[in-house]
Length: 412
Image 1: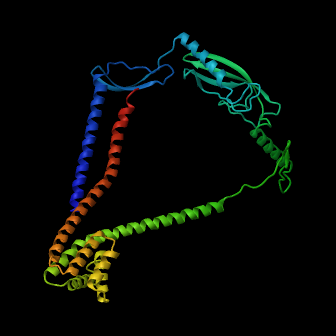
Image 2 (image 1 turned 90 degrees about the vertical axis):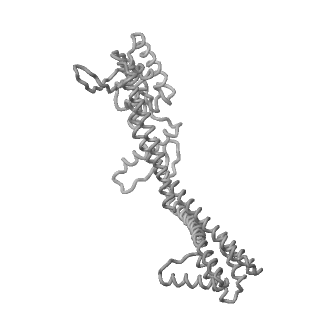
Image 3 (image 1 turned 180 degrees about the vertical axis):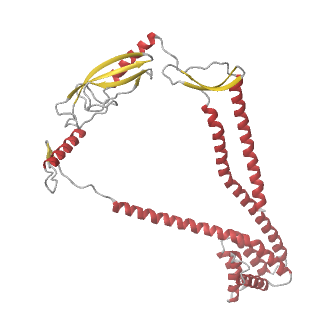
């Protein structure tokens, strides 16, 4: 029953996915056909000034031939006045941004902000220096080479816009970080350690300086928190194991109850048949337990939680408990609602001596088998739902394979 339900659900899901894929594929084909054959009139739009070139793959027919060619279309060009304006804007932007975090060109101790393009990408810039080694083309200072008295550096920006070229120069004075900043203090300490190291290279040990400039220095090794990390890891592992055990115990309990519910229809059916044949409840239970234990010993069946509860109930009766007490303990200690219902049904009818017990068991048997059928259908639906995730992933991959190449061919 479960297999048929699963197969039916998988077939429906497969049909839905195939339908969606076909619809998406047809829509993409129609869009591509319309874009390539109907809407194209030999006109390729250019990108705006400063934008990238457009690469377009086209089919060209000539002299009874049909060939595929790739054309490269330049961005829209600038007029003369626009080029002059672009150079002017680039110079203004350089003056406004090149200092970066520095406050003055006469005292540059932080990296400069030198970019390769300005004026919204219309002007490309190549940077040159009259003295190399202090500033890189990206504006990064080599702070170890900067002398204490500072260094004057002339920067030259060679600006290009289309086929035009223009030069713009300015000067800065690079200086080391001052002692009023944290970086300057650290630089002074590192320099003092370096000098001490160079002076005492022949000694067995390096004695670190205890005073640099006006700062008193106290050295210590960096604390290693491996022990704390191990303690935290231990607590995490214990917590994870505890949570895992609780989760496993809960799953085991749920599985045990589900297995007991699977056995319930067979137990009720055998009780109904045996008691309907004239046996007392005790004799019917003895017959069920004996048959089950013999099958388990012979290896014909595995141990089943529901029948094990019947074995426990029969042993309690054999140990001297009355039938009603043993049945009531079954309902109290068993966590399955079905067995509690059976316990209440049997105890009430045995206590009252009702003659309707057989009819009640038959009705309970029908209800139990109906519940089992519904449970099987629900299990099949759950299995089908779990299959939707990988199938949806496959659908997504198929759509990406179809859509991405189409999107890449669209020139925005």
